[in-house]
Amino acid sequence: MGNLIPPPGFRAHPPTGLERSWSQTTAGTVPDLIGGIELIMHGQKVAWSIADYLASLEKDVNELLKVRQKTEAVNSKPEEHGS
Image (cartoon, rainbow, N blue to C red; front, side):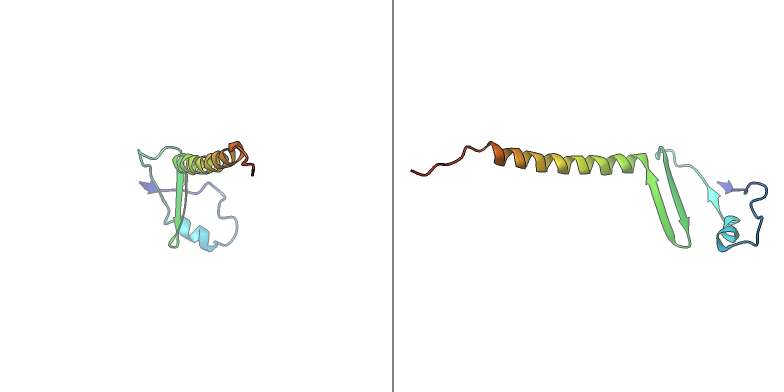
């Protein structure tokens, strides 16, 4: 891991808290993580990855399919007629 170097002209105005933190920023890679990003600053973390997105999508689709199956089961029951 190494320090990230801001592009030329990045500090065109007095440094903000974010820019002061830039000098403490490091970057690295995780071989098992494909297509993702994780940002940690001041104890807060924001993360996103393709794997997390696909897992969330799969969960949502499975929930929709369960609702659809229940709806189809209710609609396909023969109506009971009283004598």
